[in-house]
Amino acid sequence: MNVLFHPDAELELNAAIDYYEAIENGLGYDFSLEIISAIGRVIDFPKAWLIIEGDIRRALVKRFPYGILYAEDQGLIYIIAVMHLHRDPEYWKHRI
Image 1 (cartoon, rainbow, N blue to C red):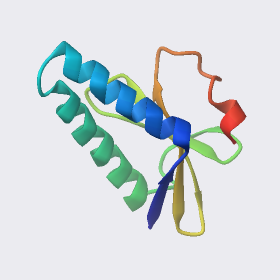
Image 2 (spheres, rainbow, N blue to C red):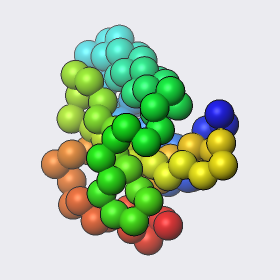
Image 3 (cartoon, helix red, strand yellow):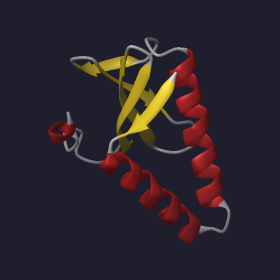
Image 4 (tube, rainbow, N blue to C red):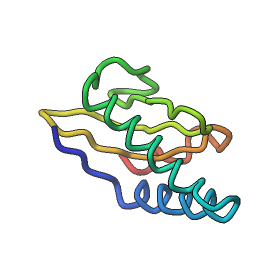
């Protein structure tokens, strides 16, 4: 299964990695590993996660307050947002 990031989701991911790395050396790396792990779970079980709107689902990231918002279609996982769970829950809707 292929994975494609919305450009803004990729920016969010990089900003979060930088943020955690600034807090503690290596924490950004740990965050990126958790994101990769969550994406792996999405690839393995794309329909297992909570639908939050339409065909958009949210997979939670372990250890960090983040969720991955994605849609799955014909073998493609399209990541719409790498969302901090305490942020405005509807900020990403213009991306779909």
